[in-house]
Length: 186
Length: 184
Image (cartoon, rainbow over all chains, first blue to last red; front, side):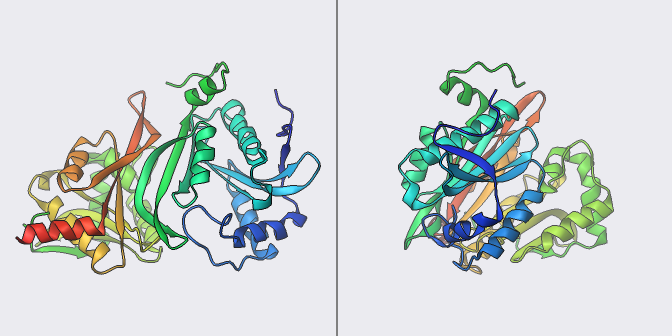
């Protein structure tokens, strides 16, 4: 059993007051701000704090900071259970300067393990869009399958692109990680 | 899509009379009404005041309307149209009460809602979702020219098994092509 959500490269921890400035920067950056449609880049640390505190009020959901094992803040990751202990949707935002180092992959792997192994979730969902092909590729690497493609659903970088819904079932998670699952569904 | 078979369709605000009918219909179409009212569990119907509150809450969303559907003086169903999330890709649903089905009302209602999406709103794509157990609705949506774009797996349980939510969409260009075809 894992004691905390810490891997070889990153740990997931509660968000602190000093994190919000960096999270506002992520929200104001076109590469890291949102999955579907552009938001006004007017986020401040204060606005992020309010947003995160509101989101953390929701039961069975969390926003966690991602920091390296050396203590460098690199992004945030969140999940929300729509039906408790049944399904969860998750999302991640990481500073572009930290991409390509395996940090996002490990952060998501830690959260997936928490959801499937500790929470007993049956399915994890995520949303992305066709303007960020790397996001779909990264999700596939984690075992997510593209299940719905909402055609020409949004605009990114002056182009009309699809919105993409992906999910991974509990049994797909366990078989792809070659782990035994003692919790069977119906 | 063929021209409207029912030109006397009217969309009206839901007043107390319609709300009490919607409340009653939960007993007749429990699964469909549970989906529409976002009420879980589906076997526990809402009271009239709860239905009213749900509808009022939904109606607070900008660019959203929930309406009673009349054919002349007959109250035949309810529906919602919303561009709350995005005017570019609005969504809509409706239910026609069982005794009025298979009369072409669904086609007429869909035609009107698509016009609202694409001709009276800057919509580019409209989306709808149907639970996989709703065979009649799936057959209907395929018949009127929506495209099957995939499914969200395991959205709920029915008779001991998980069920999926199927998604369908239509682009404005497809809507305009169909209208052109229907007028020929």
